[in-house]
Image 1 (cartoon, one colour):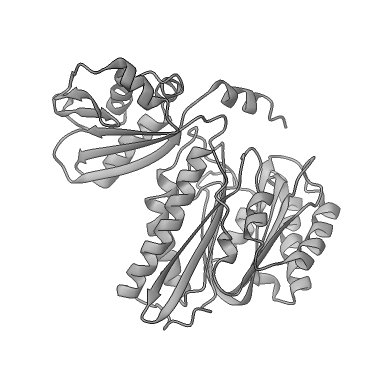
Image 2: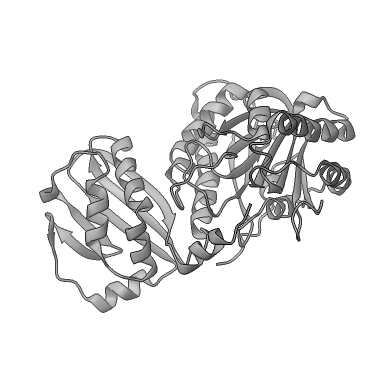
Length: 400
């Protein structure tokens, strides 16, 4: 598995970023700063977990907005379950960054990831913010992505661009996540930037639509974090006419944004804790998209399916059993199942298949599963990873 080395959040015009070492973690960079030179519209989506970290509460209270400038994020400490002191610390992070950048306090957002239940080491954090403000760079996107990693093995970034008339518009993004991933409208941490001119209302609409078919279709282990956050900033520096309605330009923006969020979602799946492969599960033939996604996520979250994938075992029975308990009605006699191009089931009954070829197919870095459960219009794609021995080892050793 290799790094996707793009500028990510600094690809659009007018954005700078960096990643520095504050000393929150035992080693490596652990504080990121993303900065827009001009005021940006912003929108966000956050964890649906009832237990929400302090920076989630802070950033959620400031979005959507039209006068944002920066996001300060750290790894190594989640600032979750830390009471009123945690709220004050999240505010202090944003306020200190704002003071140094010379922007209003409410124009800075905060995010954290790491171990739950520990007070933030604020002397280190504030000193790290001092260093970060001095380190901002138009080439710092990859460093910012690396600074928010915890159990990730490489940083995740993506870019896209499109044209509105003669105007070039850019979108860039980064994501952090490898475990505790089963989001509902957000992934672990994801920050997206664009130089498009667009209202915060339409930005939130675009982000919601995009997340629904990307981050909401991602699962590593069925756990939703206390800190899940996705934030998008749009500073308008591309110079296009402002997008303020559901128009052709909005649809073009949505396609570019979807390209970035889908790429990031797949990268997170590829880098799942202890993963040896990314598994793409497509379900077709349901009455609705929601039904198809429910079946696909149930299959994707099945430990039996995930361990079979690790063992390169074409155990189609585990896939069918998981689909059958998803809570969606379908006729088992209408089911067809494929692992890659190999047909496993037809009309609900097994088809003879070459076991050696099936094993070889499942031994690849990307595995595709197609499950057809009828003739309805519903179709959804979900990304996950396998469960290896290392998944248990990583989480057994990730102590509080």
